[in-house]
Length: 134
Length: 134
Image (cartoon, rainbow over all chains, first blue to last red; front, side, top):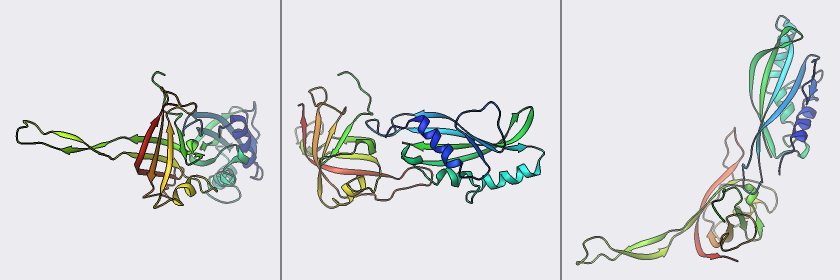
C-alpha cells in the first residue's frame, strides 16, 4: 500500500467528526470556530518495507479548545485528552485504524500541551502526534 | 548494474511474493572450515567443509489468509522454497536470483510492543542454495 496524503488527512478528519461539537478541518482555516481540530501535513518516511510496500507518516493534529481564562475550556480539554470515552481524541481516531482503507494502521502516540494565538487571544491547545503506516 | 539501494529486494515464498511485508532481509552464505593442520604446517590449515548458510528476515506479520503468518506457521517443522532477487524485476547476470530451501524451525506468530507494528524476526537454515542469472 502506498498512502495518498489527502485520503489520510480526510480519513482523520472523518474519524474526528464523530466527537459531538468538535469542528474538524483537514486544511488550515483562516479563522477557527472553537473547539476545533485541525489535521496538519504529513511528514513522510519512505520505504518502511521492501518494494514500496509501506511508508510511515507522522501527522500533527492541533486541538484548540478555548480561551486560557475559561474554565469550560479546561473541562472540555479533559474530555478530549482522555484515553477513552465519547470525547476522546485518541479513541475517535483509532476507532478506524485503516481510515477507510487509506492506510494499513495508525496510532495516536502523544498529546502535548501548549497554547496558540487565535484572533489575538491565547487559546488552550494540544498537539497530537499520529503515526500512520501504509 | 552499479551500487543499488536495498529497498527493492523481492522475497518470494513458494509462489507468494511477500516483499511488501519485509523490512529487512539477509542471506548469509557460510562454508564451515575443516581443519587439516598437519605436523609440517607452520600455521593452521583449513579446507572448505559443508555449507551452512542462513536466511534472516524481519517481517511485518499479517494473519490474513495465505499471508505471512499462515505461510510460515503452517510450514513449521518442514521446509519452504524461498527465492530472493536483489532488485524486484528481471533476473540477469547483474541482478541474480538466489533460490533455496529453508527449514522453518522457528516462527514468531506474536512479537509485539505497544508502540510499533507486530513483527516477526526469524533466521532459517538454508539448504540447496542455487544462484541463477536468468
